[in-house]
Image (tube, rainbow, N blue to C red; front, side, top):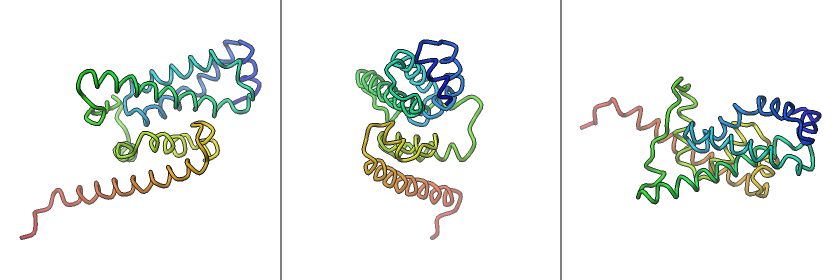
Length: 185
């Protein structure tokens, strides 16, 4: 992001903030979608993060850290969204694991579908670090800053998440390759 735009927005310039929003909205919604697995929830979380950003922007200490700060707000908004949904589902006697994800009307590429299926096998903490690291292409240091966890924790969560993804996707591939075959007698 342009430091000048961020500084203008920090001083209350709505037009500068609007430009910052235009530049980051699709990435925020995409990242939230991978974490929450629901387009509507993702849009809500991104909107919440942007409202918080506008409200708290004057307190940002370093304009150069705007992106990481905004992703941290997004992670918090996603966590809030999940807490609200879990509470709603518990009151209905359901759990998030049994809820199916909503597909985008435009459809997704096969790789993205496979990644999303794999992400379902990860813990919430693993989903967050994988999304920030590989979808948003943040460095491990930036992921640590965005989530408020230590760099070593980021590395171990990424390692465990990648192992779990490989195992889940490998098992899915094996099941898919044997689905059309007759069992051997």
